[in-house]
Length: 405
Image (cartoon, rainbow, N blue to C red):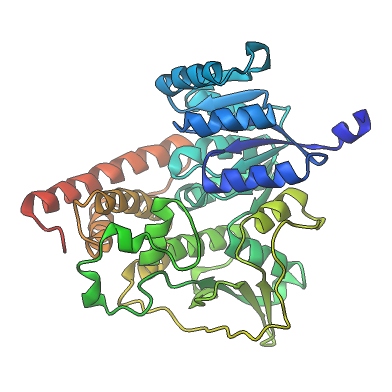
């Protein structure tokens, strides 16, 4: 038994109460012989976190604020968990970093939404850990810095996003130097066939009705604008060392082909699997091995049709803007992410219209000059500055009553 525990992977999960965190814990639940949870890091959802603590017995639990910590303590008391079984409780950014870099954890699953997970993920890379990355903002905002840390400290960065995970799997099949293009697939979101003028009066409820995936609010809106795919293009450039011109996006409504790679001779390899995030999560945890995954297999005896079409960059200009920002380099992609997050939040609050999201982002980029970013604190400062500009633009639109434009 001691030998088995010695070979178990010990995990810190950033964002344990979100959809990726919950799916990761389901993988752990189904393979208790393979994984143990060292730390659970969440925001303010203490009710879900408390239930996770009871089930998975982490050594450490971290929340975002002191107020959330007080509520978590009360929740654990109310559900009757003896204090002798409580994990070490902590809150704040420093505690998050401690959980991510602790020597007791060999693997970090980075799934916190937003830039909040950047510093902890970067520090884990500096410790040479394996990182299962599901947080887009880490590479969109700090790709150059993070990838340098991965290389210098010999960390392992395994993508959990289904598209990048698919690319990673495809690239195992041949010589990397012979690959000329990456192709990422996009579902097209709920407005794939809607003319741009019809998007003027889109409601948050309509935009949140994704046809394929069930995700958090921001990523679902980003999928509706194709901004999410733009972020994935930026990530792919950093993860796999490709130029933006070598990364294509194709709309594939069935979301079954997750990614493809094209070789110099024109051959194309595709990664195909069910739309279930537990497969890429498990892949990131077990690589280079493959294990039985708790996901449905594709039934090849059933008739099926897969469609592919190019994205409409006129209707969805944020995808084109992402390519441009990656070409510019420096802080441009950090500003892109910050402005988008502010604009999406304002849309969900009913303060601006759907079409105003890309306008706020473009105006923010015009007002915040791109510059080189050499440290985490510089990335965070650029993020704060960009958010401030985006909020001013949103406030001006709200004051003018420009909710639909």
